[in-house]
Length: 242
Image (spheres, rainbow, N blue to C red):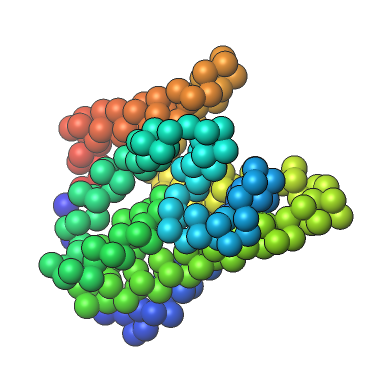
């Protein structure tokens, strides 16, 4: 298989910002939704913003607020939050080969989200080691700040926005799925990725429509992975993809 040598970016800070800007279209609407949900659940504005700043984990934040409000024991809240974020145990080993042995990467892992992970796998292989840290900081910080901004907007003015423009409430739930779709579709350039996408999407939809929404995402991920490696393992595909 042919390999492409990493290239030196003229401005990794600028490239990181450019790559992160499309994420705002998904992050801010969902963060607004969380900010509104948290305040309506009884959290203060500052508390809500701090949750987004320090947990910064999307679905985990909704679960965290819901469990705290319901009076769940703190140990259970922590365990459930960590369980939802256990996907990072998969993310880490996949991006580790592109990271230098630099202690600065440890705190920067707080900026790692599903979307930043996807961007990292796409961008970092084509960068020189010296550019990777700067690109990652730029993209990660912009995504993180947009999440905090959206949370603050939702906590402070979310209810007024919903009352003035009710359609916003209907659109918000589709923002993040649409963002994932935009990021994934460009990868469907060959049979391997296309079949993987179709298998994962079909599995999720079937389970959702069958009344098993909690199983939809993990089962879809497993089916997608199995389809990907099954196709890759075929000798004819290896020859085609080399």
